[in-house]
Each structure stands twice: as structure tokens, then as C-alpha cells.
Length: 182
Image (cartoon, rainbow, N blue to C red; front, side, top):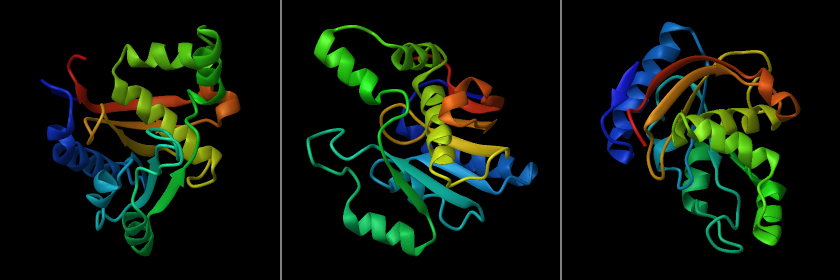
């Protein structure tokens, strides 16, 4: 496992190289990548893997706003990238309850626990389950997943996701790279 000294987008290219290499070694066909603008997903073009890009939901940053431009979305789709823009698995209505009533709820407890390993670990597990729930990756197969801390990518994992109703059956096989601290 590669440990980066610092978290952040400066690790993106090396994270992608590590993820693609391991996918090839394990004959994994699918890579799920968290990419709100599409820039990180775009860096996977030509890697020989089925690319699934999971973005923030519309309205995440600002009501009604999609962080991925229509031009980027269309360009990625022309290259065969599947794009999933939907509510975050570990936020959604639990976050609405927190905003409204100032409590903490089960999905956010799960998210907080996963963040103890780093934001990228939480993101990888979350987007893999979201992609599986959307039918964009096959059930029961290992996938390589790439996520990060804020912008770019700094974490890659091999895992077999479970559907959200059975999230605790998700099987993390390998952490390929991640920041050493957060």
C-alpha cells in the first residue's frame, strides 16, 4: 500500500496509475471514480476499464447547480463513461434531519466512522455502493474505486460493494493508496 504524506489533488495521477495497474493485475473490469467536475474521471480515459463516474448531487454546492458542466458530461459520455449524479448514500435525508433538528443520525454515524480511516476511504465505499444501487456495476464483482479528499484523488481501494440495504456486507479487499494522515 502506498501512503501519501499529504492528502489532496497532487496525488491524483499516482492514485490513478496505482488503481489501473492493480485492476489489470486482478483482471478487474470496472473502476468507480468520484469526480464532481469530471476532471478526475477524464484522466481515466483510455485505461481499458469500464469507467463509472459518481458526482455530487445537483444542488450540493448551491441550490439547482450541477458541479459538472454539460460540456464535460457530454464529452465523458461520448467516450463511454457512465455518470451517476444522485443523492449521497451516507447523507441524504439524515443530513436534512441534522440541519433541521441538530442531531446526528445513523448514516452520518457510519460516514463519521469511515472518515476515521480518511475522507477518501469513506468516499470510495459510498460511491461504489451508489454505483451498484444504480445498476452501473455488476453485483458480486470486485471493483477498483477511486476517491479523494476535496479535489482530485488520493485514495484507491479494491472492494466488492453490497447494495445500500446491506452496506455492512461490503467487502474491502485492499487499500491501494491513501494519505497517511488527515
